[in-house]
Image 1 (cartoon, helix red, strand yellow):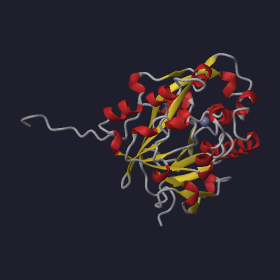
Image 2 (cartoon, rainbow, N blue to C red):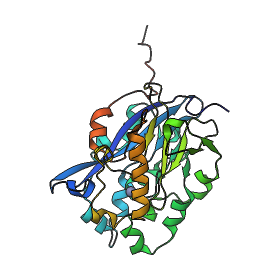
Image 3 (cartoon, rainbow, N blue to C red):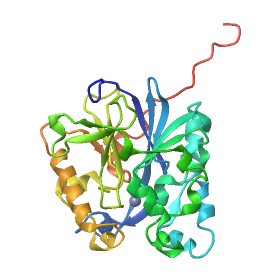
Image 4 (tube, rainbow, N blue to C red):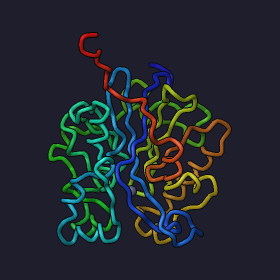
Amino acid sequence: MPAPFSIPVKFDLLRVGSCQHAECAALRGGGLRAIDFPALVGLIEHPQRGLMLYDTGYSQHFFSATRRFPECLYRVVTPVRLPPEQELLAQLEERGIAARDIETIFISHFHADHVAGLRDFPNARFIATAAERHKVEKKGRIGRLRRAYLRELLPQDLDARLTLADHTSTVPLPAAWQPFSTAHDLLGDASMLGIDLPGHAASQLGVAFRSEHEGDPLFLIGDAAWKIEGLAQNRTPSRLAYSLFDNGKAYDATFARLRALHLGAAPPRIIPSHCASTWRERGGTRHVRRLETKPAPGA
Ligand SMILES: [Zn+2]
């Protein structure tokens, strides 16, 4: 068994739509001005296991799923922008990647802004936590909507294609990852490690790995913190935001563990799914792409 992170992958961060919220919703003590919440998606290329995504962001399916009452209320509360050039399929196509080329999708949790594109990827197998998968089936239509779940976004054959992260084996994490000590070995080669980050949702699948282009491991954390500044400054979201969380105490415990990791001696690069400053810092890289330059005719 290889040591954790000994198989590096290629990684790019994509922005797939966005919404806006008051700053104080994301950072306690913040102002009322509206700030950008990009929906960030990880595009990963593993040397043996091919192309993978961490979440999908928004998609056209989101708009059709929220056309009728009561689901349309979602869009009233959270106006969403998805310019054509930010659509995930368009960004992949631009790199020469077809939807059928995506082999694996790690699902952080089942909130609509993370899973709206699942139905676009016919060959992908999915990896998610059991607690989150079961949560989507509970609650009535209104209850699901209140928690940002839209069942219409899920592929009919979701369960046939789903691996539960909980059922994969666990591996010890390097000492620098304290207070996190073990992780799920999601692909069985210790390259992509799953860490449960409960609170915002019933459970959340954080995914840690090493990129070919960076020394420190990366850690995609979904919505366990909304902004990297929040972790650095110990500023959790507003009390109002907590009313939407699955479990506020669990959220605080997860947040505190992530903050301890972030302030540690050799922290990974933590990437929250909606952090505008993380996007500004690392968006736009082109490490993953399939387009081979064809020789010019007659060359
Ligand atoms: Zn969420």
